[in-house]
Image 1 (cartoon, rainbow, N blue to C red):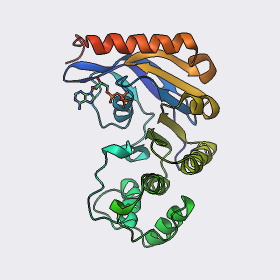
Image 2 (cartoon, helix red, strand yellow; image 1 turned 135 degrees about the vertical axis):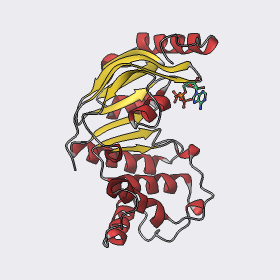
Image 3 (spheres, rainbow, N blue to C red; image 1 turned 180 degrees about the vertical axis):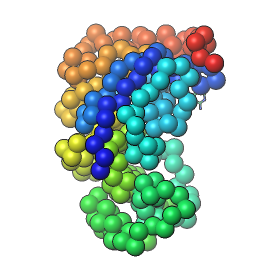
Image 4 (tube, rainbow, N blue to C red; image 1 turned 120 degrees about the vertical axis):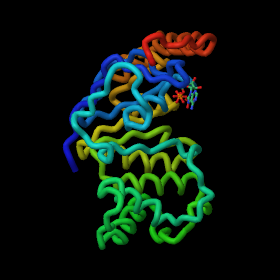
Length: 248
Ligand SMILES: Nc1ncnc2c1ncn2[C@@H]1O[C@H](COP(=O)(O)OP(=O)(O)OP(=O)(O)O)[C@@H](O)[C@H]1O
């Protein structure tokens, strides 16, 4: 695995139809840090993650990814946004993790089946290779996506609500994997709504309400005052999301 560099945001604004979803955000994800991105609904969390992954344009400002290539930043999207109706197997989905590192139009390594089997075993899905993704429960589906992340072996992991809609046992297992990946020196950035979990497990937090409310050590960020400010800012933005004059 490549050692990650810091990811630096300089005055980043991202818009949807000229309305800012992330507004003038500046800050730094330290290499190897474990950061929660929290904030009310519509606060720009998903948009920020997609911009970090290079999947949403930065309309103003810049993101410095420390020279990492696109395939070295892995994004786990919200499970609800993925179409499960395709007749693909767990093996196919998990093997895609290797494609992102090797590049398209290249042969998959011959040991890929072993690596997929190992990754599935690590997430508690031993023997699920031939199962169609449409037959998986929500928790099994999320475990499979974590197996794909394991194969991708990226130094930076972006996760959008990774523990949503899964049972307590699955959440605990997946959180243990995040802890392990963090221990290996990866930079992990996860969107989460469960602030108790954030307080227990995440040393750093970015509290977002389209603009930055607070960013730093979790205990200093998730104060009652900051949470109230986030709620009020989100309500103000929802009431009249002005066009961003700075963005094209
Ligand atoms: N494809 C889109 N087209 C237009 N507006 C969008 C689009 N995607 C998001 N938005 C708007 O951008 C704002 C930020 O959305 P985003 O999904 O980034 O927020 P979020 O913090 O992830 O929300 P949630 O917690 O509800 O998932 C919202 O006002 C949303 O309605």
